[in-house]
Image (cartoon, rainbow, N blue to C red; front, side, top):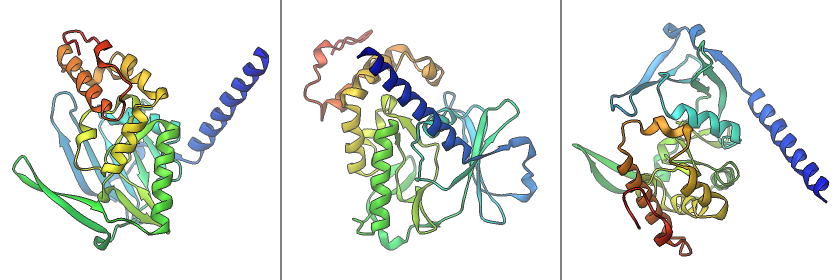
Length: 279
């Protein structure tokens, strides 16, 4: 009986490994040092000078309308991008063709095919908010009957559940139409379900139905245990909060628990004791 279970585990591990090899093998690798930037046109550049997240990321277009997304080595989202790729989140959801690495084999970006933006007729403005001194329109897709979009959205939900990664910037501007299919762009906007930051659950930018779906997955038995026990002590993310005080991080845990409780009535917050706070 035990041998049978052992063999099943070996088969599952081998199957996952073969799938991972096939997934990565479909993509070419490009060395950052070999890219001729004189042949690229910069269409967008973002400079983040906040101490904990400081980086620069740029988007370039080629003559054949491919897009290069390139960032500096200190871009925190690079780690999640590679992990989500290996976990299968991006399968059939993107037009990804290459991964860009530097001489230290650090991921520095990716290359995708060009696509057309979603027609304005399919987008509705839900409301406007003030972000600093800028008025921002909060937009969403109108209720879709397009079978191509329905297929795309179902695939997104399935990949999210299977890979345990979520796309945390699911807005119309990050969806394009390529070769008769809807695809995601801005691919590094992913986070593991075990480490979704609290703002996502109240963010006005992603659709409420997708946020509710993620919330439900986070509260599932397979996710929530890891979420509460390992998320904020994981070495993978220790440097992510290098500049954040420990007591504030504990408060963030509290906020996460409160958010998850909205759909998880079985969770008992009285048993969750923090460093400086007892819920």
